[in-house]
Image (cartoon, rainbow, N blue to C red):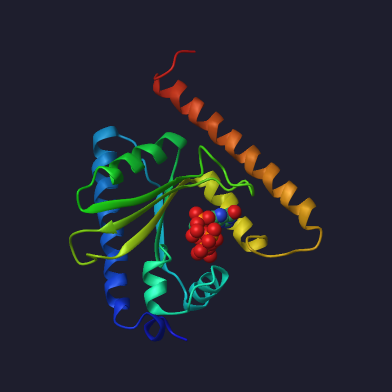
Amino acid sequence: MTYEEFYKDAYGKMKAAEMQVLETIAQYSGRDEQQRGQRSIEYCRSRIKSPESMEAKLKKRGLPVTLKAALTEVHDAVGVRVICPFFDDIYRTAEWIKGREDFEILEIKDYIAYPKDSGYRSYHIIFRILEGPGKGVTVELQIRTIALDFWASLEHQLKYKKEVDHDELICRALKQCADEIASVDLSMQTIRDLISGSVAV
Ligand code: 0O2
């Protein structure tokens, strides 16, 4: 099934919402880099959830596979991922999003402060667009560092929502990698703070 077949008339608006969020973030990123002399955002990725993935999510939650359920019960039909260099860039970017008047915040999931059992770390903001071409569309924004994204991308390919042989062993090994990566991220943040002079040696 194609995206247009599944999302029907809503698809155009969803694409407009995706573009609107990407453009808003690009503007913020450019201004932020000019003001601070360093960037808070490395790059963004975005996607509309595939019909297959949406169908699987609805079924898993015991919901009907309908457009209405896809757009009202699931919040990540439109997803944007923001990749930051350092931990503190995640929270700076999140605060900026939360302060915007054109986005109504619906839910925050701080999997950085409270990692998932898998080891997954990321900061999620679910918001509704109140103005502009994407007005009315709900978007899930995932904000994480380059290092956390490295883990999440590979874990998504290897294991996320899959049963594999030696499941327990594999989960434990992936969780250990996640913890080590988070620790390296913290060290990189400390090194940056030392170099910038914001903490004393
Ligand atoms: P995809 O394929 O990335 O779109 P749930 O119903 O619990 O599965 P929910 O309620 O949407 O998911 O919330 P949650 O747990 O915050 O997950 C939202 C998204 O975060 C997921 O979307 C993934 O993109 C990502 N995510 C959450 N947990 C993990 C994890 O353990 N590993 C990785 N790699 N990503 C994770 P989808 O729709 O599940 O998947």
